[in-house]
Image (cartoon, rainbow, N blue to C red; front, side, top):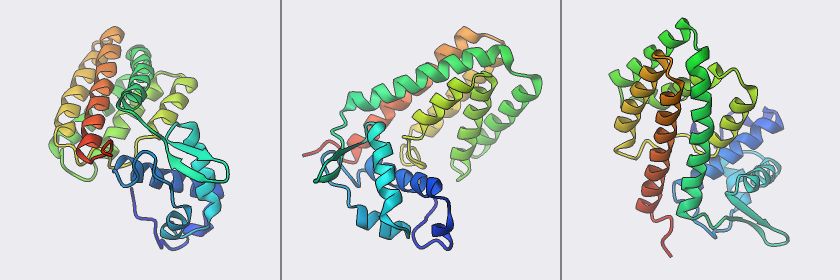
Length: 226
């Protein structure tokens, strides 16, 4: 996530944008282990660090409660929800199921130009797997596929589920980049073959592995330690 604390002009952004920035910062704190299950969220500190008022932070916490990340208790404040390992895996399972359906549809709908674009993105990731652009390219790869499903509903659901995963979350996981590159190439091969069923299965597996890696990463950061 780009630094926002003290960023010039940040308070001039629309309230919806500020809420998104605050939500992303809170997700980052949770999934980095900075805020663990049961911890109270210091709204004042977050607002001060981001450089704007508490209102967007409060709105972000309400939105994150809907995602199951935060629990808001009246007259007590907002706390990190008691997320279990299965909660994390279930989130990726849902994301994988919907992404798999999108990939199945995309296998039929992708144009030749879109397949060329997917190959370009996959090749760029393979050429420099450790670059700062890796996450952007990963996002672009899946976005092309999701949009090719030609389903606004599927795209909307994927966007909502993906938003719970903070920017940079996988950068610290040593196995994620390599396994992700292999998965992307296999998914692309299935799409090029117009094999919707195979693209669906491979995409689901890609996100299931992501869930297991997310759990391993959080365990390594002491997320569930007393």
